[in-house]
Length: 297
Image 1 (tube, rainbow, N blue to C red):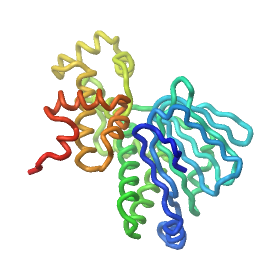
Image 2: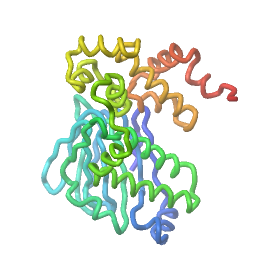
Image 3: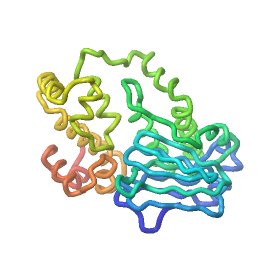
């Protein structure tokens, strides 16, 4: 459930009980459905302990930072690019790391198919970035589900959101098939093109703060050699290029969502909204607020 104190940039949604009752009686939506959904960026001091078990499964996907959880008297650690699913009707607790608190996507869900998706997911599972990992595609799907549930109570919207959630879970449960689908469609990048694999890596990590050393390690080069090659290929330093991608994504969110500027800032891994606003203004020539309210063609 949504914490009362909250986190800067958080998004969360709890579906009303009357709507859940409707979903449970619907033959399409009831097979697997969401009851609560949210995103907590840099969730410092986040802690939850449920002595009285809940009937839903709890999905948590750590996209940055670290945390831990305990279930059936066993404690697990979770790090960046890992997810786990806590079983329904089980006492559990979880928390963000005190030094490097996690950023998480989380969902409470139920339905007749829920046990099948949750099977064997009590331990952390890796979602390691790679040339065909499609992490950003999955994160965009989460946003689409959230926006759909947040914008309409119509049964067709609910059915669409739950069908999309089915796909979202399948992209993790059958992760190799999800990745191979992109490779077989001809989107595999050339290994001798420095820009394309790096842009892919940036896209997969758009919600994080990353270092030059991380990106250089990804492409197997020293930081100085990588920086030289990338600037020669693009005319920009790697981290400047990354910031341009963040601002492009910010424009999309400003145009297509009602997220606050603070929420967008945190979604892009920029914990200081004032820094984000300065970066946006420098890049776009106007503030995020002015961009959102501008006259569109």
